[in-house]
Amino acid sequence: MEWIQWRDQFPILSRKVYLNSCSLGALSRRAEERVLQFQEDWHNCGASAWYEIWLNRLTELRSRVAGMLGAELAEIALSHSVSAALATISSSLDYTRRNRVVVAELDFPTLAYQWMVKPGVEVVRVPSDDGATVSLERFREVVDDRTALIATSHVFYATGAIQDLKGLAAIAHEAGALFLCDGYQGIGQVPVDVHAADVDIYIGGPLKWLLGGPGLSYLYVRGDLIERLEPETTGWFAADDQFGFDLTHFEFKPDARRFELGTPALHMVHSALGGQEIIDEVTVPRIRERNQYLTERLIDRARAAGFRIRCAPSAERRSAIVMIAANDPHRIVNTLATQGIIVDARPGHVRVSPHFYNTESEVDLVVDRMVELGA
Image (cartoon, rainbow, N blue to C red; front, side, top):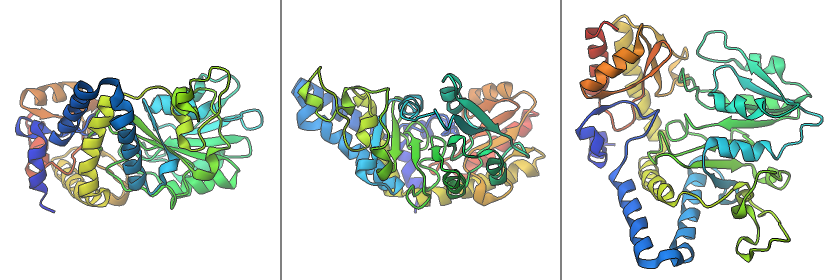
């Protein structure tokens, strides 16, 4: 793969040293072209574009996502955000006998918030022993016959550590619970086969590594689980006879689209399709190989310069989210921005997240500048 050839596809790379894909993936020319096509369809067809064009684009996106995740088309739904997808799923579960939801203390707060507001549901937080990872043993200690589901991350947002999905699924299923994985930080940078991993529910989205922007998320639900789940949070896109407009009768779609809500943000569907085209061409396994190389180079350079890194102990469990300890991360991030280097801050750390379109010289530069700034 000639990685340098992809840089022309992303205008920001000619203007900035962009190392913040974990917050927002770079906007591509492909995505812009897709959005322009959406606008032309709107100009040319008006509302009839829904039936002639746009419904097929929704199907195209679901199909591409299914292929990337090793899922079937019927197992994929579109939602507006991870929070919206979680709300739909959480409203589908019966908590009368199993009222415990297990999360990790390193998870993004959205996962815990969803169940913290539900009366009678107990949220159990699994601790981290090293501040970067959570062991399977720690999960096994708290999962029991009161557990409705394990709901945790594929990749931890503040450490970049990759979790063992198959191991987590086994722990959940041995106790008769479900396994829900928030894959938002991992999808597009870390390969996943949801069937092989035995995941019940997987949620991702195009904002970050998939280069598609905000306002959209993807929901996978295992095929044989779909008809057992009937959400209490719903909308007209979930109705089996969606265009029957029957106010007196409601029946869910038989596939994963029963978890969809209202009209999706079509401009973001098109942007996501542009980004997904690139991901599909490059392929996630090759992205993983490239990102792992850049990540390990960055970690080695940072450690050699005397920085402490918050990360998983082995390269196999590290993703392209690198947390570099700093006394005043916001000062460092703001100063680097004035120099045209875009990274992010999290408590006590500068977060650097290279993607396949970055170069060795860029990851070297951010370390050199942090040394100069006395980080």
